[in-house]
Image (cartoon, rainbow, N blue to C red; front, side, top):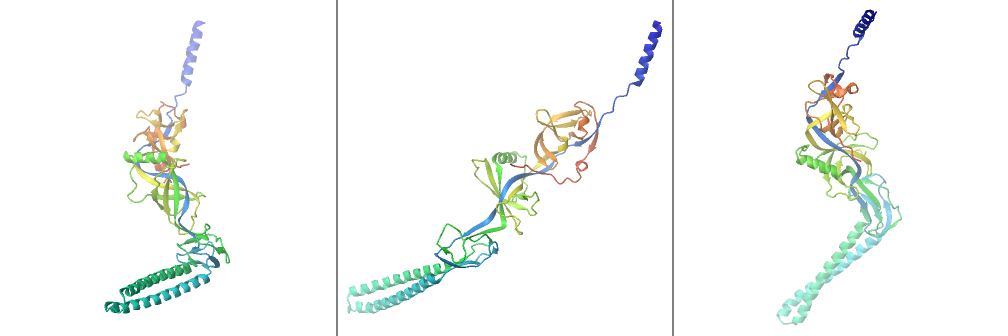
Length: 387
């Protein structure tokens, strides 16, 4: 009986051994071998458009507006007449000043001739020296009167010319603050009309001073290189998220940090021939600031986060074992991350199949290229949105 039970146990164990399933094969994963490549550093900044030039047209003489010679909102050229102030009182002042000049010139001629007649008589002692000196003094005084009358005539001419108000710059006009019949005064606080030159147009963007310091440090340490000797190029994203078709140039960076926001202002200039950009529009400016000659790019799908919120990637070692590494991501580049720490050129990063991989497990890697991951990917350009 005991032999029968033992035989049954051996038979059962043999059957169990034969039915045990084989171990599963290593999971297949897609890996990307990291390689350094030049990456253009592009910073995305919030900004607003500002007119290239602004002229506030104000009267320089008192008077009544007779005519408005432009259409509100239209394009005007420099030197084009905008308003006509009643010129009648200024024309009369001009005529009076001209008559005063002619009278002064006649008196000067008489004084000059008298001095000329007295000179030989004084030498012959036919007249006293005092009379001759008085004649010379009268001649000089008459010459001074002529100069004063000429200046008064010029003042009258200028005031008469000021009755015709011209556009100081070319640009687009705003609404007029006066109509025909309005009384205006010289140098009044309210402008009659504002002219703004919109082609080209400025875009003022703000950048945190900490970011500016980081970029300066990267340039000084050789991590970044200048994109070129010329002015940095800039592109715009409009309020409706559509790209502005024309490229601008960075003009200057403000030398003072705003104490309230801790940011500096960067001004770029953009061509605006179609008048798409208007003053005060909110835009986002993409500014090329440098080139990272040894950038490492990792697809965003390959980057996860651990329980502490740190960015991590899974790499495959020489023994095909998976290992998790903590990395430092600097900025987004389309659907990729620019990584500065945690990985090195030649590392194989798992991009597809991460969910089936455990740290330390053996995997079956399959090499892929960046084009296979994203065939429509454009040339890398780093961007860093600023809020």
